Length: 141
Image (cartoon, rainbow, N blue to C red; front, side, top):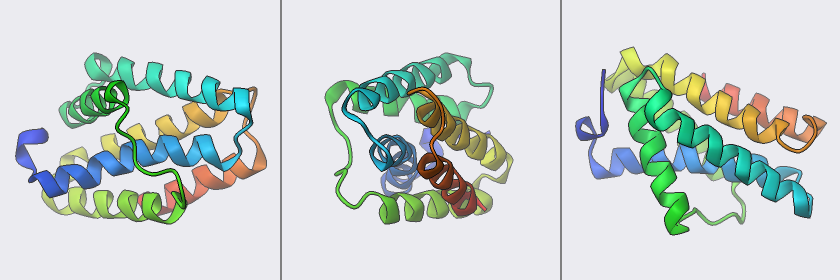
């Protein structure tokens, strides 16, 4: 199993942008004012649960750093988040397929579960959110 120390800073940034971008993408794609707070809260709880609860070490490291980034308020720019997020997700999956293939399915599961958690947070999944989750799954391959 790979961990954060197996990646360069640039590679780790791609993985982190895939993680935080997923939250931003889903929370901004169909966001009502109060829905955004609910979605952020659910995303935070899900990520926190993965810090110690994920069976995969790579996912634990990703969740740990994502949680720390959220606590510091470090988030990618929400403007035009769709394309960069999907590109980071695809790049992260390709990188893991090459560098840590044993962790690829765990990463995919983490990203999809994170997206679904955010989408479901505010009273159900809208058609727009379902489309976003589908695009994320496509980007993962």
